[in-house]
Image (cartoon, rainbow, N blue to C red; front, side, top):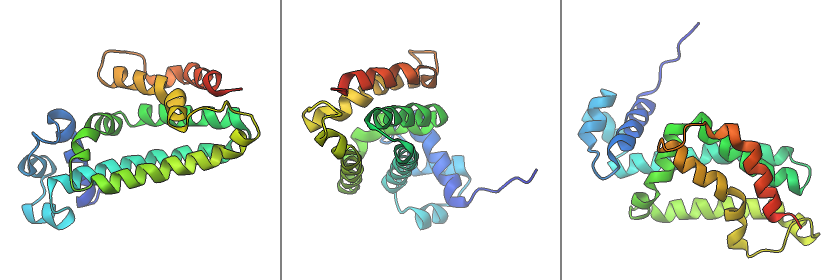
Length: 194
Protein backbone atom coordinates (compact mmCIF):
# COMPACT_ATOMS: atom_id res chain seq x y z
CA UNK A 1 0.00 0.00 0.00
CA UNK A 2 1.41 3.36 -1.02
CA UNK A 3 1.15 6.26 1.39
CA UNK A 4 0.58 9.62 -0.22
CA UNK A 5 2.55 12.37 1.45
CA UNK A 6 0.51 15.43 2.28
CA UNK A 7 1.57 18.73 0.84
CA UNK A 8 3.08 21.30 3.20
CA UNK A 9 -0.03 23.43 2.70
CA UNK A 10 -2.30 20.55 3.72
CA UNK A 11 -0.13 19.79 6.76
CA UNK A 12 -0.54 23.41 7.85
CA UNK A 13 -4.31 23.27 7.30
CA UNK A 14 -4.62 20.03 9.28
CA UNK A 15 -2.56 21.45 12.14
CA UNK A 16 -4.57 24.67 12.11
CA UNK A 17 -7.86 22.76 12.18
CA UNK A 18 -6.74 20.88 15.29
CA UNK A 19 -5.49 24.07 16.96
CA UNK A 20 -8.63 26.04 16.12
CA UNK A 21 -10.89 23.27 17.44
CA UNK A 22 -8.87 22.95 20.64
CA UNK A 23 -8.33 26.65 21.37
CA UNK A 24 -10.63 28.70 19.16
CA UNK A 25 -9.45 30.98 16.37
CA UNK A 26 -8.68 33.98 18.54
CA UNK A 27 -6.60 32.03 21.09
CA UNK A 28 -4.66 30.10 18.45
CA UNK A 29 -1.37 31.66 17.42
CA UNK A 30 0.60 31.25 14.22
CA UNK A 31 3.37 29.77 16.35
CA UNK A 32 1.02 27.07 17.67
CA UNK A 33 0.08 26.11 14.11
CA UNK A 34 3.70 26.25 12.97
CA UNK A 35 4.84 24.02 15.83
CA UNK A 36 2.08 21.47 15.30
CA UNK A 37 2.65 21.34 11.53
CA UNK A 38 6.46 21.48 11.80
CA UNK A 39 6.39 24.15 9.08
CA UNK A 40 8.77 27.06 8.94
CA UNK A 41 7.52 30.60 9.50
CA UNK A 42 8.38 31.33 5.87
CA UNK A 43 6.32 28.40 4.66
CA UNK A 44 3.36 29.49 6.80
CA UNK A 45 3.38 32.99 5.35
CA UNK A 46 4.16 31.79 1.82
CA UNK A 47 1.02 29.63 1.74
CA UNK A 48 -1.37 31.79 3.76
CA UNK A 49 -0.08 35.15 4.95
CA UNK A 50 -2.04 35.16 8.21
CA UNK A 51 -3.90 33.05 10.74
CA UNK A 52 -7.17 34.53 9.48
CA UNK A 53 -6.34 33.43 5.95
CA UNK A 54 -5.75 29.89 7.20
CA UNK A 55 -9.11 29.91 9.02
CA UNK A 56 -10.92 31.29 5.99
CA UNK A 57 -9.31 28.67 3.73
CA UNK A 58 -10.43 25.88 6.07
CA UNK A 59 -13.94 27.29 6.17
CA UNK A 60 -14.24 27.75 2.40
CA UNK A 61 -12.81 24.31 1.65
CA UNK A 62 -15.20 22.66 4.12
CA UNK A 63 -18.19 24.44 2.59
CA UNK A 64 -17.00 23.48 -0.88
CA UNK A 65 -16.66 19.80 0.09
CA UNK A 66 -20.11 19.75 1.63
CA UNK A 67 -21.56 21.69 -1.31
CA UNK A 68 -20.12 19.29 -3.88
CA UNK A 69 -21.49 16.29 -2.03
CA UNK A 70 -24.87 17.97 -1.59
CA UNK A 71 -25.01 18.83 -5.29
CA UNK A 72 -24.22 15.23 -6.24
CA UNK A 73 -27.18 14.03 -4.17
CA UNK A 74 -29.46 16.74 -5.58
CA UNK A 75 -28.40 15.81 -9.11
CA UNK A 76 -29.58 12.24 -8.42
CA UNK A 77 -32.93 13.36 -6.97
CA UNK A 78 -35.98 12.97 -9.20
CA UNK A 79 -38.69 14.81 -7.27
CA UNK A 80 -39.29 17.28 -4.45
CA UNK A 81 -39.25 14.66 -1.70
CA UNK A 82 -35.97 13.17 -2.90
CA UNK A 83 -34.50 16.67 -3.15
CA UNK A 84 -35.48 17.61 0.39
CA UNK A 85 -34.14 14.34 1.72
CA UNK A 86 -30.94 14.79 -0.31
CA UNK A 87 -30.22 18.03 1.58
CA UNK A 88 -30.61 16.24 4.91
CA UNK A 89 -28.59 13.22 3.82
CA UNK A 90 -25.79 15.45 2.56
CA UNK A 91 -25.69 17.33 5.84
CA UNK A 92 -25.79 14.26 8.09
CA UNK A 93 -23.36 12.22 5.99
CA UNK A 94 -20.84 15.04 5.67
CA UNK A 95 -20.92 15.91 9.38
CA UNK A 96 -20.53 12.23 10.28
CA UNK A 97 -17.59 11.74 7.89
CA UNK A 98 -15.91 15.05 8.81
CA UNK A 99 -16.58 15.79 12.49
CA UNK A 100 -13.51 18.00 12.98
CA UNK A 101 -14.27 20.12 9.93
CA UNK A 102 -17.95 20.26 10.89
CA UNK A 103 -17.06 21.33 14.43
CA UNK A 104 -14.87 24.09 13.03
CA UNK A 105 -17.58 25.33 10.63
CA UNK A 106 -20.30 25.28 13.27
CA UNK A 107 -18.32 26.99 16.00
CA UNK A 108 -16.11 29.41 14.07
CA UNK A 109 -18.58 31.22 11.84
CA UNK A 110 -18.89 34.11 14.34
CA UNK A 111 -15.16 34.73 14.45
CA UNK A 112 -14.86 34.57 10.68
CA UNK A 113 -17.78 36.95 10.26
CA UNK A 114 -15.60 39.61 11.90
CA UNK A 115 -12.59 38.93 9.66
CA UNK A 116 -11.45 40.38 6.35
CA UNK A 117 -12.92 37.30 4.67
CA UNK A 118 -16.49 38.02 5.87
CA UNK A 119 -17.62 39.43 2.53
CA UNK A 120 -16.29 36.51 0.53
CA UNK A 121 -17.78 33.96 2.93
CA UNK A 122 -21.16 35.67 2.81
CA UNK A 123 -21.03 35.78 -0.98
CA UNK A 124 -20.23 32.06 -1.22
CA UNK A 125 -23.05 31.22 1.19
CA UNK A 126 -25.54 33.29 -0.80
CA UNK A 127 -24.45 31.63 -4.04
CA UNK A 128 -24.90 28.18 -2.53
CA UNK A 129 -28.36 29.09 -1.21
CA UNK A 130 -29.37 30.55 -4.59
CA UNK A 131 -28.33 27.33 -6.35
CA UNK A 132 -30.41 25.24 -3.93
CA UNK A 133 -33.44 27.54 -4.31
CA UNK A 134 -33.10 27.34 -8.08
CA UNK A 135 -33.18 23.53 -7.90
CA UNK A 136 -36.39 23.60 -5.85
CA UNK A 137 -38.12 26.41 -7.79
CA UNK A 138 -40.04 24.18 -10.26
CA UNK A 139 -41.41 22.15 -7.34
CA UNK A 140 -42.49 25.31 -5.53
CA UNK A 141 -44.18 26.64 -8.66
CA UNK A 142 -46.04 23.39 -9.31
CA UNK A 143 -47.28 23.14 -5.71
CA UNK A 144 -45.20 20.09 -4.82
CA UNK A 145 -43.78 22.03 -1.87
CA UNK A 146 -45.56 24.26 0.61
CA UNK A 147 -45.38 27.98 -0.04
CA UNK A 148 -43.24 29.25 2.81
CA UNK A 149 -41.14 32.35 3.40
CA UNK A 150 -37.83 31.62 1.65
CA UNK A 151 -35.79 32.33 4.78
CA UNK A 152 -37.74 29.61 6.67
CA UNK A 153 -37.26 26.93 4.03
CA UNK A 154 -33.69 25.98 4.90
CA UNK A 155 -34.33 26.10 8.65
CA UNK A 156 -37.27 23.71 8.34
CA UNK A 157 -35.23 21.28 6.26
CA UNK A 158 -31.83 21.38 7.98
CA UNK A 159 -32.81 22.76 11.41
CA UNK A 160 -33.36 19.48 13.28
CA UNK A 161 -30.22 17.80 11.91
CA UNK A 162 -28.22 21.00 12.49
CA UNK A 163 -29.36 21.14 16.10
CA UNK A 164 -28.47 17.48 16.62
CA UNK A 165 -25.08 18.01 14.95
CA UNK A 166 -24.29 20.67 17.55
CA UNK A 167 -25.21 18.25 20.34
CA UNK A 168 -23.22 15.38 18.83
CA UNK A 169 -20.14 17.43 17.98
CA UNK A 170 -20.05 18.89 21.50
CA UNK A 171 -20.29 15.42 23.04
CA UNK A 172 -23.71 16.00 24.59
CA UNK A 173 -25.26 13.36 22.31
CA UNK A 174 -23.48 10.03 21.85
CA UNK A 175 -25.10 8.52 18.76
CA UNK A 176 -23.49 9.42 15.43
CA UNK A 177 -25.71 11.82 13.48
CA UNK A 178 -25.77 9.47 10.50
CA UNK A 179 -27.79 6.96 12.53
CA UNK A 180 -30.68 9.43 12.55
CA UNK A 181 -30.52 10.66 8.96
CA UNK A 182 -33.81 8.96 7.97
CA UNK A 183 -35.62 10.44 10.97
CA UNK A 184 -34.35 13.92 10.12
CA UNK A 185 -35.11 13.45 6.41
CA UNK A 186 -38.68 12.36 7.11
CA UNK A 187 -39.16 15.30 9.49
CA UNK A 188 -37.84 17.72 6.86
CA UNK A 189 -40.16 16.35 4.19
CA UNK A 190 -43.15 16.48 6.56
CA UNK A 191 -42.35 20.12 7.31
CA UNK A 192 -42.36 21.28 3.67
CA UNK A 193 -44.66 18.91 1.77
CA UNK A 194 -47.99 20.35 0.65
